[in-house]
Length: 358
Ligand code: V47
Image (cartoon, rainbow, N blue to C red; front, side, top):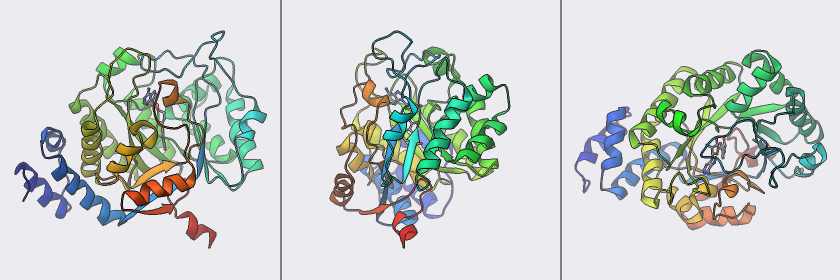
């Protein structure tokens, strides 16, 4: 049935709802039959979400780029005194919010002077002024930092954030769950066990979360699959993940690599994740890192969501991402329609936004 006959067995498994192993996922990467891979991933996507592709009217807010960490892969972080360093005032943060938004996504640096109360007040103020906006805020890396500076448990930090209005956690800070890569690129950042523990605690508290994989730098395909395997195991345990987002590394000025991953590698990563992560409802095609064309193609390789309008993305654009800073709602809808899909607006928790209005 497939040009690559090795895909036949995977097709059979997928049709029978039988999970594939990490070794099989790795073998999928080696397949020369890209379209066959897409066909398998797409069959899973369509079984779960039909022909629809979701998007959210959201705004990304990166309150500061000042960061006590110095990760080698990151073009966003800065240090006090550098010309590009910034820290937004509360007024500036609030000015980014408007009542038409469904979601704000807050992520930023680990500021050397801000205390937890300040980070907490960002969530509280937004929630009080704009109660209709769902707040997706702070990666596990930030949560770990808050617990350290506040000298309390992750559970307490998350509970206080939830009480202030936090709805879910974004998936950042996971990078790639490989000690080899962590030591080389982000030795002072939390590793896999702590990232997973924080998301497990969030799920126990009823806080849903996303997950990411940063790929296309120095990691191997086997390390990517191992990363997905750890996420799949935690999802078996808690069921708390909403989505998986493969983040294609933007090369920027870090000199780690000269060229980003190819579109073929992007589409393979999308398809392999859709096939392997059989307990994840959503796989996101993040147009900011993929670019509009690949993001659109990814909608035929297993992705069922395009993220959102975003407004003003700073992390990937600090690394010279070629995509626009934000996208109008109409343009996002057109992108989905031109891929032959039906656009459906959602909220941060993937509930249909139009149903909520009814
Ligand atoms: O953790 C940093 C990544 C992440 C670069 O949860 C880079 O819905 C590519 O996690 N090229 C933060 N990626 C962003 C993030 C995210 C994005 C969209 C949606 C959601 C969600 C979460 O960005 C970081 C890091 O892995 N990153 N630098 C770069 N040059």
